Length: 606
Image 1 (cartoon, rainbow, N blue to C red):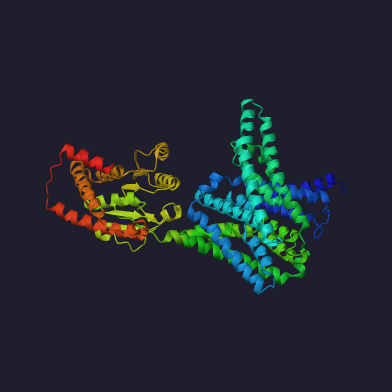
Image 2 (cartoon, helix red, strand yellow):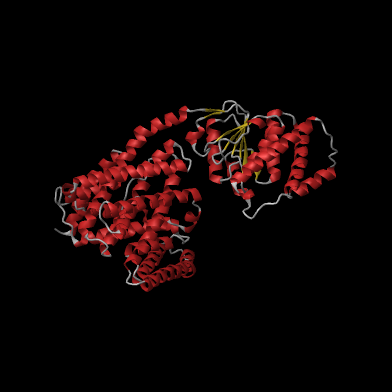
């Protein structure tokens, strides 16, 4: 049968099966795999796995990894926060370690075989994750899961790069391989940045836009050929080529050009993968594959939920995130293929694990839909059932140095306040100072929904992260338009974003702006401008005196004042000193605040 007839039959089945899977709310990738299985030797047997189809699958895999590499833009990786970086690394290390131990002691595998197989099964399917994210409406969770996928893609690239080291004849060969890899990537990066980029700029100036795509393809092909010539595996070379091209200023335009091809690439790879699956293993080893699939999915689910809870995510968010990350996918397939190619294990040994990987790929979307439709609403209802009543008129979201200063001034003005922060201990005693603390993640809308804010008149938003700050502002504007918002801005750009949202009260981050914010927010509550201005001036004198006293405290080499525990101890000390100062104020100690004295205090503050 000619290749043209084979492709026609494949397209005919895909045009029926893929829309059916989409109508069920399932990712289209499942439709492609099912198409391959239906046409394969274990179903209708209409298509033979020819050499041409294998080549098409290989090209599809390389292009898929090229697209994944383009996602790993250096700036995008640098922007990932430490907590978001820790979760995927910890998850992969724990899963691969458990799998390695199980493989060695229970399945009789060698350490290297067990490490490669468990490492591949522990990696998620980034392409499947991207399609599942389209069904999640929470942009914060979507961003978090996308970053999770990027980090695991980076782990996969590092693992693929290090795998040949286990099969080297000598340590000298391994060192030579590592040095050639570093030299090739460095050289190609410099070539891309300082040679090819000026060529792209010249093409842009000459308005030959049709050649920009050709130049980008040339750059990617050059990177791929150079890496493969140095003995670097083709799959890793494709991924690194995408990573290098992502640093180009024409990255977004290139993505726009190749976006129509992306679906066809996914289709080619997953359809041929479905055709080539050794499904006879399901009949030969049903008990092993059944127990293995249940164990893999259950361990992944429990571990991801536990890690998300450890990093202070809510139960609904933890469960939804875990369900989205269950599938193994293309990275596991590549590692199993590399294990066969490097003669780490034979085909008979690897085939059951390939079937296990694909069963995980096929079943995980059904579990994700079940969690999203049936389990998640119950968790959200239970989570919102425990309401937190806020009786104070002043709410402070973000209880760092900025929010703490507002709280101290509120305490001196006999104004009750409520603080929200997810990084403090619940036993922090604020009641003696007219306040209360709720340990919640204000960036999580489901946790904010547990707050009853009917008594709140003014909210001070002092969250440091710009994106989290903006999300909180949007939530409060949408759900509590009657609350007056006083927002701390990190920089000029943040202030511009807040202005665009219609926020009238914005203070950029300095000590003086924190004092002014405290003054204005409390003035809005108390409507007593003159006495409050006097109180603020007295507070500044008191705080400067206190700061001069603290300069004489000797700290040890560990610099305890930089730790969170020491900062909270210092806050308790400051509240105590403020209380003593408050008592002295009640005695109406008078001080002459001359203009020259006030000007000198401002200079001291700066």
